[in-house]
Image (cartoon, rainbow, N blue to C red; front, side, top):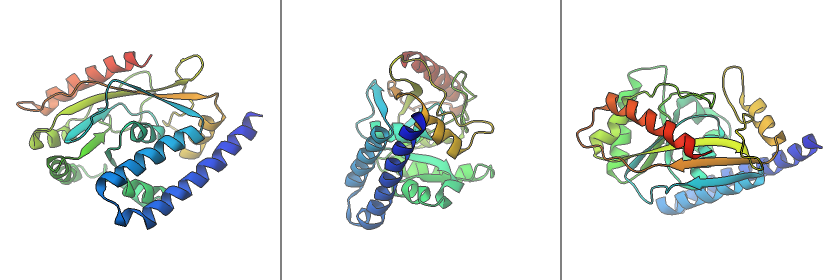
Length: 247
């Protein structure tokens, strides 16, 4: 029975993905930036609903930019969850741009791309992030650099925090957790680590009992006079504290 329900949810998700692709290709060129952001947020919230995932938002998402959101990273589901709470521009690995369909959705949502294998590429991305923040954008990053197991936080990389410092923009810490919607016990179904792949993670997520995607936003922290390495360490502690608030 779970497999049948999962197949039904998968079919609905595929149709909704196709709809999102069509909207981006046909409607986005004529929409304002604010209207595109609203479409992405609405589309993401609908996708969670179609996959039978409850969205739980704690704290207050930033109403407007400029601001840089930093969050722990657990799964491909993180981006959908944050987008459903508040549209932002994500910094994603460059390979995503070339994924069929997903690449179009990611680019249409305003993603900035980084080639993680090239250390010098961070300088280019920081430059573009700084420019976008100065223009009033909301940007989100996962400073762990990769997905974690949901139980511990990996060290936060400091390089991309320089964009907030250079732009004089605040940073908003955030924490994500996925849980059984009924018991609120942590669920590892959406995990995406080690030997996991997108297909297996998606199938586990669809087969799992109803999930809750919980995102908790902290208070904005001003960037004036900050040292990015020291800030990365304190932000990791802040995100860890916010994780406790998702329980």
